[in-house]
Image (cartoon, rainbow, N blue to C red):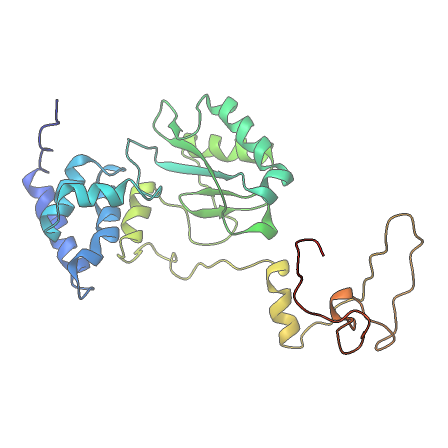
Length: 271
């Protein structure tokens, strides 16, 4: 049987959300462009995007609930079921995985007694694996409500979730102080973070991320390093201009320099 229409918010909640939605919609020349931040707004109300929240977005934007549902179900940043106060995401993409991310994720599942995208019984922590946290030079990385916890180990990650569940203060490696998932959702909707010192707090890229910029500015000189084939003895680094460091920048044979092998189309495959 088809579902009945979603219930509406209580009058006071709807009035507050309508005032916030009006502010969000005013930022865009086309009102439907406000759908993404409005989904964050309704997520900040209940901790996930409910049918009521999608109905609200459809009402204020003049869309169908089907159009809103299509967007809300496309992006993983919108939760479709109740979640914990803290979203603990473990990066299991290639670099983090080989540096220990897979081990962290497996141990956290056992330690918390939950699976991927599941929430602890106390409603504090939702565990999920994330494909990439864009912090490879700090691998393995764990994020809590999108704040970075760098260079983690299974032991440090277990201490982290234990502190979150116990209500102890937890400080990210870099970035703003930690807040609840509902508070994070409101910030993602585009409303200012009014916590003292939160805006001033900032993170930064690691040395491996910045070396290219430093080189471009002439702030650091690379150490010459030649990797020799396996089985051969290490060679002294070549002097500047004496030889090419890579075959990619060495002179290549062309039809002009090698008349016996002119370049041109081949007649048969493999010729």
